[in-house]
Image (cartoon, rainbow, N blue to C red; front, side, top):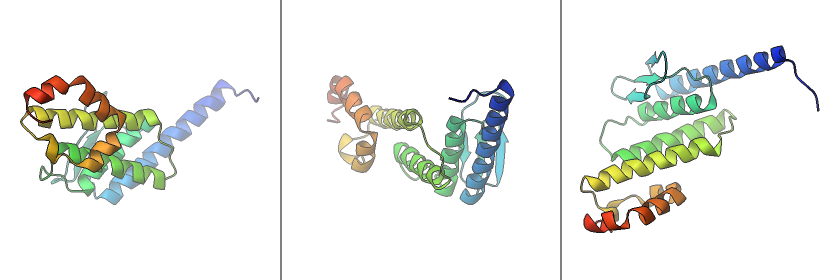
Length: 165
């Protein structure tokens, strides 16, 4: 196995950072994003569909690149609150997956699983606010898979108390 020098590794990391930023710029542009605000440090990414504006961290890692593509998905799909929040998050995540695959970026399962858990959290919030489990989108639940099943197992009594089962 070939051993790489520290300088070679640094060059490769910088090349990856630049590639991710270029890919994010293309995805954001194609989605119709007109302005981008970068966080100086960590922050919560957000899309403002009406203004076609996103707030993100610089896409220098795969996770940040995925987040940028996800927020672009909100703008592209014009998410303004007309759909349930968990459906919006699902659609934006699928958009990000599709766009990154088009760019031939491998997406670690850990990143996708993180977004599946996020969608389940959004479903939980809706149920706690009085939503009905019967009206949940089956396609989204199937996509969430084991995370939805774990949620059901852990929250059976709460769901029964809210009469959503």
